Image (tube, rainbow over all chains, first blue to last red; front, side):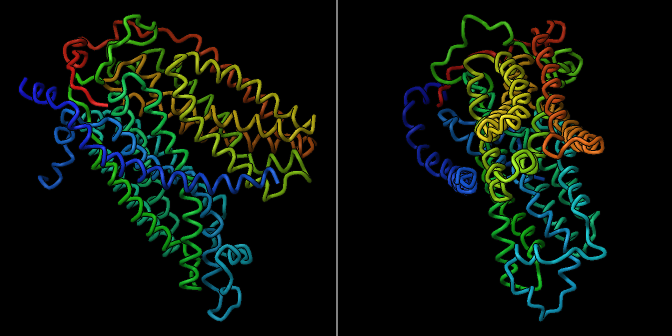
Length: 49
Length: 485
């Protein structure tokens, strides 16, 4: 119960403090994915030349 | 083993306020890594000419060429591995993917995703290292044992480890959540293929006497081991009873979505499990028939229009369809339901397979490309939607283990799909069918196979209550408002 109350009082705080984690985590996986995707798109463009 | 206690499930339970959107990147780190398997074919040619290249004199002018030109210029020598032999490495890895997913699924549900992801990273990374020893010493069995067996176990563990966790974090959008992760498996090859080619070129430039495969294997092993550790340390499981803030399960319960749980041992005994197994086998077999033949089929059916370079672009386009379909179809299934999504696969699919030979008769390359693209999107979509379908029917408690068991369908499809394609194609050629038409019967056969899947999907009903766990509703379903995003 104590944990719940503590959390409910500061419900916004944990979310804000974890935003930086999201800002690291998502680019960490999306940048390689988008790089790979762009390479594939360039290769696929041969279909339409 | 106190050193490894950070891997324990208890250490991975999220604290209140944990942002659930950190879990998909953890899952993606694993799936983007193991998706490398689909790019294994970039090693086929270099691996088939290792002896011939090693026997070139250090002064040979061929060695000054780039790695790709060197491999193209050198003829395989006596003692070299055949390309068809090298192909077994990938096949064995896929077989072990299915087997390990089936065997270790229940263990994963018990120990949690972090330990399973760690085991996956170690197996996958060390699979590369052992494989590199096999390449260096030209011992094929070591390559098979390394990449095929050890790496294959890493693939299976990695494939299933984040799925059930994501389903538990996203009870409101399970299709979206699993689609994001499984999309990574499709996208992994897009990263690995150019990366591997660049690494081989680099190592050959550094040492002209080497085709760079051994060094590339070691480098990939290190890269994937580190990259997968990001997933290991980031993943968290929700606290028991956690639900997203403000989320209330729909009062209008959908007929096929259960709030009960079925254990993996009971799921195995239900007709629903086997109907889904046949559906996945049918869809994957049909998809593999297109993936395996995409490049030669496009060139054979449209001679003059499709060159080898254009065919390479076509294969790339299909991989985009495969990856995109994983995300889009599974997300779509959150809105229309899993059964309806599979009904789309099994009605639209046969039409598209029949249209492939028609596109050749009509000499319509755009129609051909469109059909193959949508087929591949549904191939990926069937993989990505399956965990959510399992969760709907069997509950969340052992969905990881059940998912692992159902992936044996992938292993079976991986064996029969190419066999159908090759033997049927050869049979037709022997009977005088022109090269351009040798794929027609296979496409009709695949359309028929999808109709079997259609019937199976229609037969899916809610799981009989006699299979439900007896302690349902006492723990996991109690809603504790712990928030999160």
